[in-house]
Image 1 (tube, rainbow, N blue to C red):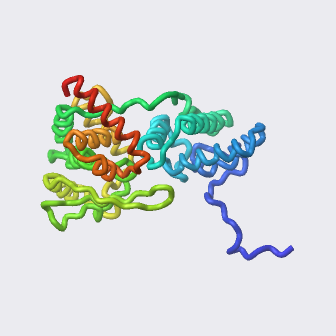
Image 2 (image 1 turned 45 degrees about the vertical axis):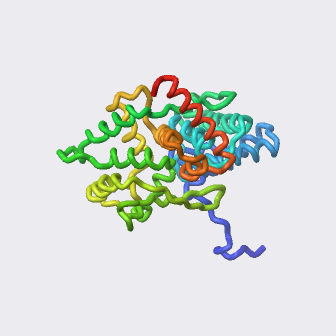
Image 3 (image 1 turned 90 degrees about the vertical axis):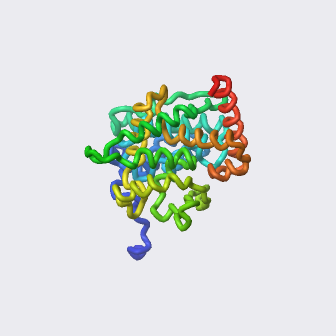
Length: 318
């Protein structure tokens, strides 16, 4: 039988694609393990429907984590971030039943990786399966915001005497715009539009169900000097933040610790704080929804949570 031309052959997605479970190591890309896991589910008697559902759940994990991420680089914090993104930040509604199934999928997948010896530990073991509505996020009170901004100014640039511009620039950007972590990492210098320095604009490009969308968010003019200082220090080229998302998470966490927050400062808390600030400033639902990049369906739950956060803060006199 004549072999097809080489150019027409289907090449493996990854050079490290394992042929058997024994070939999977901590450096194996996440996506490259899925076919073997599906085979394991089928051999274990799972129905075609279940295997298809579990496979789709894991594909969603790659949307957040990255298909090429080595499985050994994924920790519990990453998985917690995935479920938060799926429930609160992804522009697709997620029912409690779907949430529970995806939790089951992730737990089963990483348990399997642990059992076959590909991982020494199970990063999903500590994930808590829950029912009922999602808990409200922590948010910064006005006093805590001021304390965090002050704390962000205490960082030094590369162990020198000059202030590090990145912490305050990042914090102010997140509090002013409410953008998501993946949107932050996708920013480029061209995303900051400064044709009119009295009215700068942030251009955000984001993906919803494999379709790219765009939105513009007004920036505060007094944020620009922070941005200028950041550009002078870090000289960004292709992307605005030439580091990993985890590096920026550490920056936010350090700011919160220096400010003495009773919780860990994160992208999520900054985003909810930004939305709450706009709500308290009297902005319309459509304004906040557009700024946060949410659909009407997603806003239904998010808007309710923002109002509940506002009520709880007022009860505490904040």
